[in-house]
Length: 346
Image 1: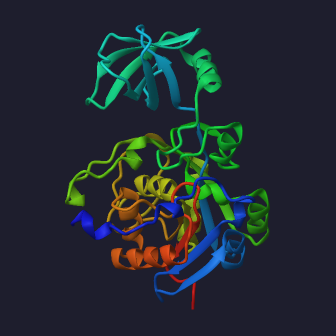
Image 2: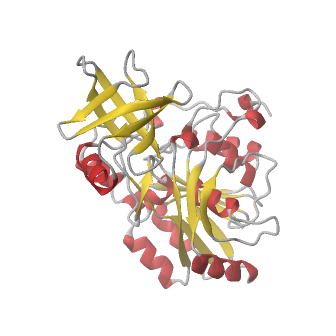
Image 3: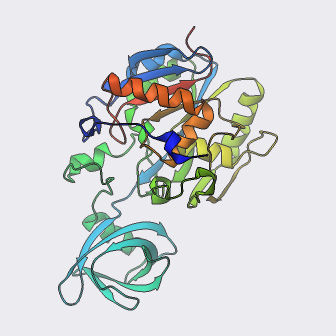
């Protein structure tokens, strides 16, 4: 399947640089797969579309300040983007700086330094800090910067750190936010619960592999990087019961969807556990557990665009994206939301 089929033109001024306030005032494009109808709403209108027959599954991962700045012994500047924790003192990381090799030290703070101990693939290195565990976590929290995507040019501030986090974030480990969840407010969640909508939490620590550019012309040949995910037994039991009752399972974001699909057996029954997942979803894939999806608008030619196209169709998604551009929706991480449903608009 040619990657060019997943391209669309996006004016740069539609790439959102900051979050709408209040969060739930972002726009919401409702797409009905069955009728192919579209409704243009706001996120707070989501309450009007859901009933006691709907079940939301959110990702409670928490973003940590994974971007670090330091210098070599010679004084040259170095940027580190932590991408995956290996153990209490070691990480995989993308490192920006000249003439860096295995064995070199990077000085990040008076209290912290890191050494490159392995070259993984040229772009990614394995580094070891001279601190570990909670002591290391505390320093990274103090000196680290929000790992905003490169298309967001907004300066990192305490407000941005707060904005780039869901209100229900709990389990630290992501290098990117599960952005569909950024639209939720306490008010919206309370309104949904009052209507009888059930809400469950899973965890998937988002890695940069999710956003890695697809560098092959045939999307079937693309390789997805693994991510750590977890679902507890109590949640699995409840979700399996609700699914059996024909309740509508709505994944909040592609991260929640990947988690549910990765933990679903071929029979569609959900299983519990903690594991690395590398599920790759593109057109032709049949969703086993997820019925509907709430997500943001994704980059052209990206694996996330492939994923949403598998739930609807490529043709319908690209057609809808073009309409969203025409209507000047805000795109990507701080952008507006899209509710992809099988039968929501009559």
